[in-house]
Length: 293
Length: 220
Image 1 (tube, chains in turn blue, brown):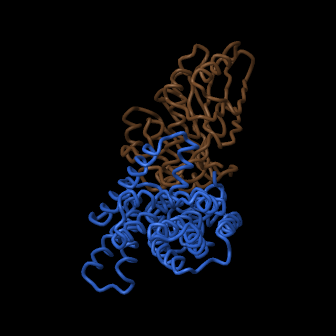
Image 2: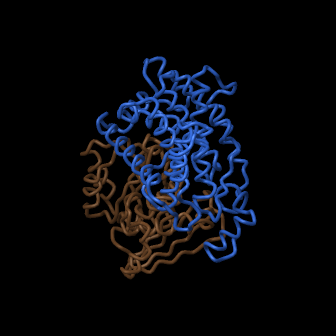
Image 3: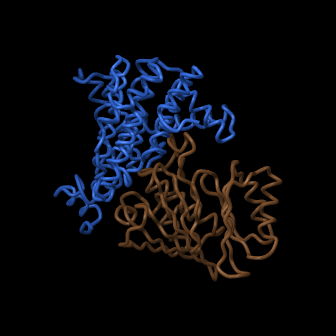
């Protein structure tokens, strides 16, 4: 059983296994389930992610409020027609992350990773690096177990709830999870995965949860976009051998403490930040036809 | 460890837009439905904290009612649940409470059908995970670290033994157990934390016992 990142890394060193394998073994033991059952369930989750991305890229998705929809598709089409500045892989991640969150905002079916508000980051990063790394189905499933291992540690030692810890707990956690999984898929070591997680999460610290009108749309969709791109950048940094001065577990603990000291107005109450801007207030009024509380 | 499974993190598969405010809400509604065992005639839903402030935008209302109708997190009927409840003549009211609870995502559901009533307080702790904090005024002290079974039963001799006998027969070990009652001979509640996974077959077996009124599981 691992309870923090250090124990997870020690476990992989000791048993000479990958992080995804450590997560699979733990799941088998704790829940008394077979490997086949667990892999099959994750395969189904992967399929849900693929379908959500496809829908968001191909269809003109619109949320019920009308605040979001179509950005993933727009960027995807721009990439097909233009020489991009940031590069196709990074923007592919951005487009697919937004596509997922736009489907989510339209009350479509998604897989929470670790939450619905942050559901775009992990699939966005996964399906973007897929084109470059040509992984097998098994490797793509493993990507999700590696993400899950780091998310598991964050959820149990800090928080993955915007209401409890702000956006850093949602998109921040997802970014760290995706960064770590990209490293494993690209052939990096478990230790490099942990470094990528730390590097990614450090740059999401302090991010508040301030959804306009209380909807999981603005700024959530675009925060997922940057989560996915940051994850890939952090993974490259870790693969280059760059390490975090602050150990991953301490970064996670810092995230938790920052979340605890965040005022309630910035924790998913739609009372502060972007939600409280004049435009944010106006949009809330237009959507719900009442003065914000 | 509150989150015990990788599928708490990569999952649930759900209808958007929020794992805590939509999927978690559906799950709390579903726990209430399983405990109540039947479709209620009415439901008063009291929302606290972030639930009270953002429930419309997050579809918390449709998810809670979806759960009460028996829909799981991925059921695509969730967005239409208010209409479906209306069609079934279920009277649903939402009450935005100004008070703060210990957890920002707290809901109190009061349900009724005929003379039968139930009250449940649940919280959504993130990523779709939920906890039940109170049932019919009984405070539940669950660690959340293990699967748990809630049994509403008649306070009379043999009731506890009959439930534990079923668990023993199915090779389920009890890690922690609490029994509380309102008054001697009246409604009582057993909260049983176990080490093994709880199957639906086991719950059905417990539910069929003469002294057991209602049974459900929480914390998979």
